Picture (cartoon, rainbow, N blue to C red):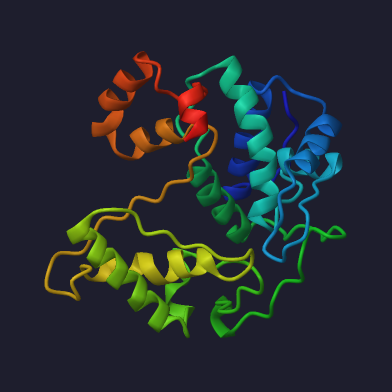
Length: 256
C-alpha cells in the first residue's frame, strides 16, 4: 500500500493513479525506472535531455509534488505502461494506459489550488511565471499552450489559417496533413491552441458548415488500440487485421 499525503483533490488523484500504474508494472525498482528514462533519450521543451531521479518518481507517487513538465512524466509513463500492458493487456481501470488521459490528469494536478508547486530540481523545472490579476497566468513560459489557453494564444493566425486551408484541401483530395519542425518550435501550441479551436469554432471551409469534432490521439505503445479507443467503429477492422497477423510487431508492419 502506497503512503499518500493528506492533500485532497486533483493532486492526490494523480498520485493514486500513478501508484496504481506502478503496481501494475510490477513495482520495478525506482532506480531502474530512472535509468530506463535516460535510455529513452527524450528531450523537453527546451531541447534538454529528460532526466527523472528515483526520488522524484517516489515523490510523485506520494503526492509530495507533481511534475512541472509533462515530458518528464511522459518518459516515466513510456517505461511503466509497456510493463503493465505485458502483465495485463487490458488496464485494470479505464485510461490507465492512455497518455492523453494522463496529460489531462496531470494538467488538473498542476492547477490544483490545494497543492504546492513542486520544488525545482536541477535541469527539470522552470521558475513559475508571475500571475496576472485574478489569478490568470497568460504566459506559459517554455511550456506548450493547451486548448484551454487559446484565448491567450496570439501571433500565429497566418499559420493557423494555412493549416486549416491544408486540411480543407485534404478533405477534397484525401491524404494526410503533417506538422513537422524542430523541438521547441511551437508545434504543440499551434495544434492545441491554434488549430483545434479553429476547427471547433468553424468548419474548414471558412465557417459555412458545422464545426468539426476533434479527436486528440497520443499513439503510445499501442497506436491501433489508442485509435480504436477514439473511434470505436474501427475496433472490428483493427481486430480483423490483428487476427490476420497485420499487427504491431509483425515484420511487415515494422518495415512500414
